[in-house]
Amino acid sequence: MSHTEPAMEHADPYKESNLDNEVPLDRKIQDLNDFVKACKFGMMTTRDAKSGNLVSRCMALAAQETGGIDLLFHTNTESGKTGDLASDEHINISFLNGSGDWASVSGTASVVTDRSLVKKHYSPDLKAWLGDLGDGTHDGGEDDPRIGVIRVKMTTAHYAISNRTVIGQMAQVAQGIVTGKAANVNKLRQLSGAEVQQWRKSH
Image (cartoon, rainbow, N blue to C red):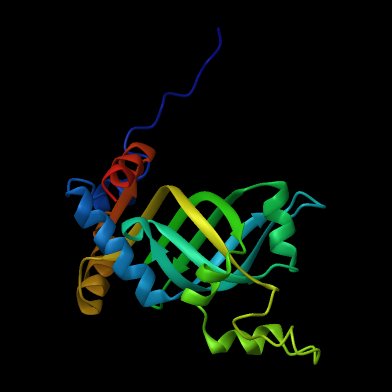
């Protein structure tokens, strides 16, 4: 007689205690947008075109589109990540702050070289990352042909933002250590594919 282990109920009590999806769609997106803007920097994960390994690098958010769900990042079009995206358009952008709040945005990406879009969101800070090749063209300025934009179109997202003060969080964690009850410290939310598509229709 074969024995199968029964499915464990309530195996993820942290998720059960912190799940907060019963909020309007516009509130879920607004809170995510506010968090992403406050972080400014995110880790961009792509699949390496040569090895197939997942690789991440820090990127500065340039702008948001479609009511905040689509993310724009400037890039050097000669960099490895643009080659990765040509091979596999799937991408993840993750954000984290010092309090442990986080967001994960999954989607597809394209590299846009339209000069009007590049100039619209151009920042002189890009010069520090591109360098000046001394030929009068590749100088890191807004007309530098190396500069493009990675447009990330969200398909789904998950995030967790604090719902308590630091002191309140510490109290919850301490209580959890003593009682074994999962700490209720975050608003843990998910944006499904259907919700993202619903948002796109009105934005």
